[in-house]
Length: 138
Image (cartoon, rainbow, N blue to C red; front, top):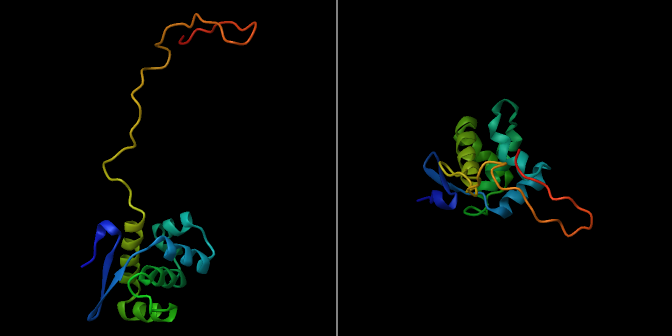
């Protein structure tokens, strides 16, 4: 059984189930094959109108690397042929999302600050000679 917390997705194809996962090493290998960086790679499935079958095959191959290292690019293409293109895009897209999870419902912690200009005026001169104390706020 796949472990979504580890970024693993099971891809059922006929009587076989393939475990997909993008590790850092497999992402780097796909970057090398496609000649693109991690950001365009992570956004590839956002616009399926421009998606190429070559890219989907390379991504599927990369996602198979960890659990099915004996499958080469041509083997990934055979899996795509059996599974059909749309399901392959769907499952590889899920594996890609699992590799780049967005924190749902969690915002970056930000320090609690008062409103700008609510502090008191500074009365201490700077260490630079001839500097004039500045008031904060407005």
